[in-house]
Image (cartoon, rainbow, N blue to C red; front, side, top):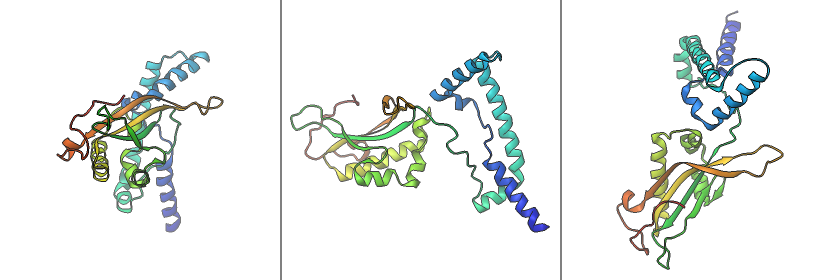
Length: 234
């Protein structure tokens, strides 16, 4: 009987953790996808006789999401110490919806000037997924490193860890290529199209662009290059 109760308790706790609770607040509605979905669902509901607008629908969803979050936390509060101790408290609401505007991490670099003395072109060192310098692919696609930035490309604001990662990646690039003077990390905003238009994916914007200059980061000048630097990305 005790064993059955313990098994039932474990199944209940982890079953409710894995359940798709509607956890939503105002910050979740700042994404481009959220605006598109609100417009679409407001039109769909209005078409079947439910009078609403994207703004009213958003307010209702946020209210339900906040209630859901409070309820879930109250249900799991007695078990939190054990979940933290065992490291088994992660919810598994993965890939709940596809994002048609994902961010694609891209790393570029350039010397201060070209051999002809003109502004040097950008050189792509890494572009997700899996394209570029082998050592950068290994570094940036390591599962622990990806955990730092993986959802940053979809957020309206980047966290401080994104800046720290940009510093570290730039340092490694400067150490490997002494002639480079500027490193850029950014997320290219893609427009991923479903069938039948699949394959027409294109870059529609840039998020969280960070420039790191050798002189500012390391305090030295690139070897074999002039001291002048041209400004931002084209």
